[in-house]
Image (cartoon, rainbow, N blue to C red; front, side, top):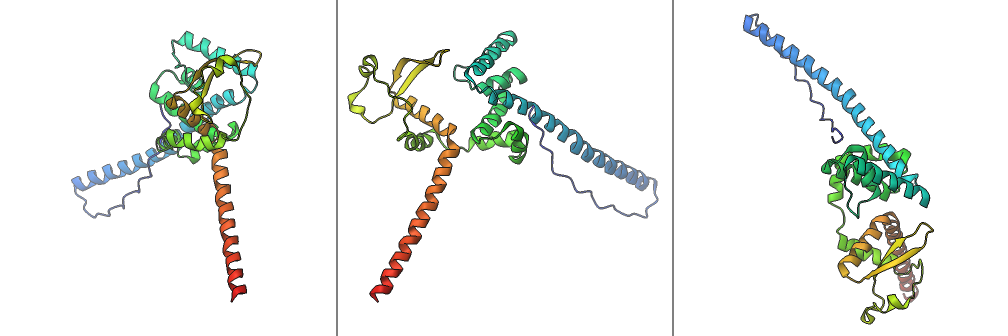
Length: 266
């Protein structure tokens, strides 16, 4: 069940004053008053029950989010993944190989309903991408208008191809590690110098990555870059904003310099 969106309050109709004392008029007035009373009851119900229901939902989502965020060490992350796998096996759930850990948590907690799991997972991953702390998750979802609004906003997000272009600029000057091994070099296309490749590596318990394959498909590379963008969207947006300010300052200085030169030459 999705979070409940409270309908806009319905303005009470103006009371019609009638001096008709006929039986039909009295029945009509009685029904009108009962309707008014039902409207008031509905408004109280919406305000109390709906809000309480959403508050409880956001509290559970907050705990799901905290479970992921607080698994900071490699050992904790492995323990979380093993526990999720155990739960999935017991409940008969299946995770896709690319499923995010938050999606796995949501499925274990809320069941296999695909649409609900997707909506809740999108809300949590959106919060993660925005750098939201677990204590602030309920406020984040409320400010966005609810889980469903977060899901709909996700549908209007930047296209993967555009994300890949942005991420390429971000990682162009970064360097995590250098890999130089004959087995890998032999697979490289010498015509793609300075191009991006995807190394498929398996993580060991000791933190060592074992390279299993080299993928040169542009589709796979773009997907990987799009993922990098999603994980670093805040940094990318901040850098873009800083560049806009810098460009504006540069433009202003150039205008001042031009004005000074104009005065000096007058």
